[in-house]
Every structure is written in C-alpha cells, then in structure tokens.
Image (cartoon, rainbow, N blue to C red; front, top):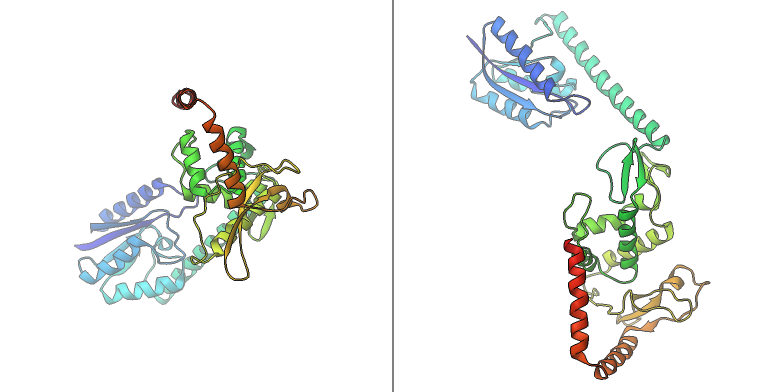
Length: 359
C-alpha cells in the first residue's frame, strides 16, 4: 500500500480553521478511495502560498529524506505552492527523495498535456493571489478615504463606533498629560511611576511601562494623521494633541536618542511641572545644552518661549541657581512651623488619596 502524508494550508485572507478541516476531509476521502495509507499530516495556518517560507512545509520537505512515504497529498496544487518557481524547486527535491505530489481534486496525468495543464492551474492561482492582494489594498484605501478605521486594536485614547474612531476623553486627557509631563522635563520612567501610583492602567487593564509610554509619545496618530502607502490621511484619527506639542516632544526624543553616552546625564529637574514663568505664566521646563568646551549646562526654560519666541522673552535660568533659592526658602519655611502637625496633616492627605485609588 502506498504511504502518503497530507499537506494543508490556508491564507489569512478570509479563511479560517474550517478551511483546514475541509481540506483534510477531502484528502482523507481521496486516500481511502484510492488505497493510500495516511501516515502523517503537515499543516500551515494563516500562511501565504506565494513563497515556501512555511514551517510545516519546510519540515515536510526535510522529512521526505527519510523515505518513509511516497506521496504528498494536497487538496489543490495551489495549497502546495502558488509560485511556479517554488513549486518546481520543491517538487524536484521531493522527486529525488522518491516522493510525488498528488491533488485530491485536480486529476493531472504525467503526459506533456498534463504538465501544461498543471502549469496553467498554477498561473491561475498566482493570478488570483495577485488580484486578491490588489482588491484588499484597494478596499483599505477606500475605507481610509471614507475615514473608517481599518482594523487592529483600538488605540489608547479612542473608542470605535461603527468603524469610526471617536475620542475617549478620559483616556485622551491622560495622553495629553503624558505629552505635557515629558515637555516639562519629566522622564519617561518617571511618567510610568506616576501612572502606576495613581492606578491608571492601559487599554488592556495592565500596568504601563517605558516602551508603552514611549510608543504613545511617538505615535503620530495623536496629532490626527496616519500615513499609509505614502499617503497622509487626516480624517481617521481625531486629534488629541496639537501638532506643535507632538513635534516638540518628538524633537526632544530625537535629541535624547542622538546624544552619545559620553554626554548623557541622569539629571533630575526637581522643579519640573512646578516652576512657572514670571512673565507669561507658562511652565518652565528642564533643559540642557553643551558649551563650546563640551561642558553640559542644565537650566530651566520657558516652554512658551521654546514654542514661540515672540510670545515671551524670558531668559533661561540656571538649574542650580533657582533650585538653591527654592531649597533655602523651603528650609526656612520648615524651621518656622510645627513639623509634627505638618506630618500629621500630610499623613491624612496621603491616606485619603490611597482610599480613592483602592475604591
């Protein structure tokens, strides 16, 4: 009795596990009808047939060297391969190992006419694959033109309603805070700590981490655009942060990435998010620069001026200078008050905040 293995495959385009079940059923019925003994099965799920980079397929080709079976049984020849080049190469390998590929639904002889027919079937399969790819791309483009969300997990800050994205204001405010915190000089890892301490979770209900916050800050969708196939669409993602703030954040991220390890510092700006410009009332954010001799200078700079010099002319102020002033003033303040009473008050405030988080 001839021994056969069954190879089955389905693509990710609108096919499911049921496709595999159908292929296996037809192949087993064919084997039983023709006196073949099925001794093995190889299955690739959601794998394209346009190339042979498929795990189960490659394992089957390798196993043919063991000479334990004589035939590979497929539902249709396009399940084996849609590329005539890949088909010819792999069939040649199987032939050297004494194995032939047989289709359960396409009966083709070994005559010259049969060879031509098989080539035609493969050409039709390749045409179908290319046409399907074009249709999918065309469909996605039409959906984007209409402003429809084309699939995937719903991004943080948005909800999906009738295939369109709408802003989830609760989440969007958290996204805006991330951008503002980073601009004010708070490091990404400290933003993560802040989110964790206030009990704020991501879209999946799990803790934020450096990578997930970094992805938020780098995601151009939040300024209302998406780029697909070299086309920019502005009608899919409602804008959550302004273009100016997004670009400012990403310029700062790029500067941090380019800075060599030799010049990187782990400077903590103690007054980030707390220091206000005395001229315009905007936030003073931590920043740094390198002098002509390579020395790193740390200072606070008015964020309004950074974005638009015409709106504020406040000069940058030395980090060490202003922090020393605040430290001295704070020290003098604490020396004039009842520390026990203050500690009791702080404890009460902390306990109330913890109850809000756990409730």
